Length: 101
View 1 (spheres, rainbow, N blue to C red):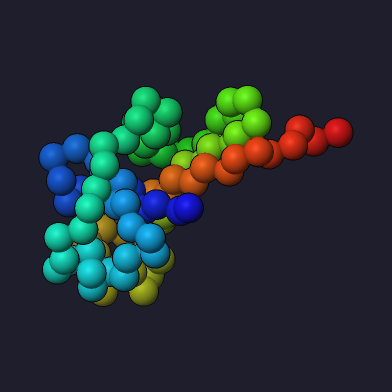
View 2 (view 1 turned 30 degrees about the horizontal axis):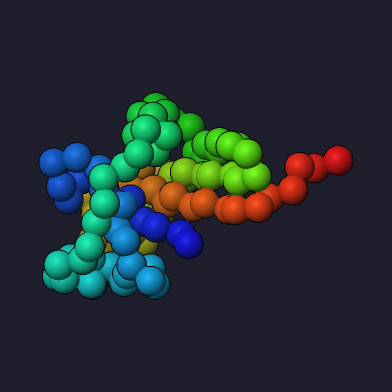
């Protein structure tokens, strides 16, 4: 399941815990369930803020990813900043991933 990570709505970054990705309208107005980030996600967010675009971690048969969501010109109608700025992130966990040959 892909979870969106909010970087600036709360005191500390959190992931939205929803069965479906919430719409931007829902994020702005609804009281959505969130969870704190784990150690891998917290470290990844620091690296995303430094310019890294995607981080992965393999543990056993699983693979985790945290990636940047960067602003495009059309994002700036609702978000302040510039194209290319880090607006948020996504976090994703694959399970039972086979090793590549």
